[in-house]
Every structure is written in structure tokens, then in C-alpha cells.
Image 1: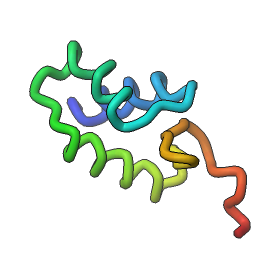
Image 2 (image 1 turned 120 degrees about the vertical axis):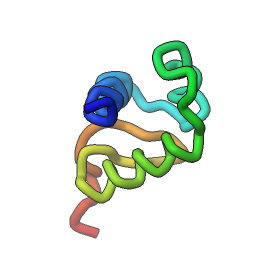
Image 3 (image 1 turned 90 degrees about the vertical axis):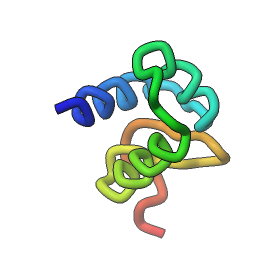
Image 4 (image 1 turned 45 degrees about the horizontal axis):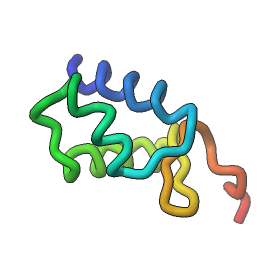
Length: 69
């Protein structure tokens, strides 16, 4: 349940492109024990599921535009 809530927060924050550090800084007040490594692992899983795109060092909610490549 907690991971789904965290996932929802991540997807809502990623309506604008953010780096890992920026995203971690915004989530830190809500999840004080959240480590960057844990956040990165969750972002990788969301990317595999097609919920998050990674482009030019930033994460963004949604499918990657170049999914065909």
C-alpha cells in the first residue's frame, strides 16, 4: 500500500521533467526515510512498465515518444 502511494506521488510530480536529485528532494518531506537508491529502483521498474520515460537525464511521466526505436 505504501509503495502504491509513493508511486502515485512520483507520477504526479513527474508531470514536469525532473532529475533523480530533484525528485528525491521533493519527496523527502513526505517520505523522510526514502533513499535515492530505493527511488531509482522504483523509477526503473516504472520505466519498464511504461509509466515513466527517461530522457536527457530527467524522468517524466508517460510513455517514451521513441518507443518504436
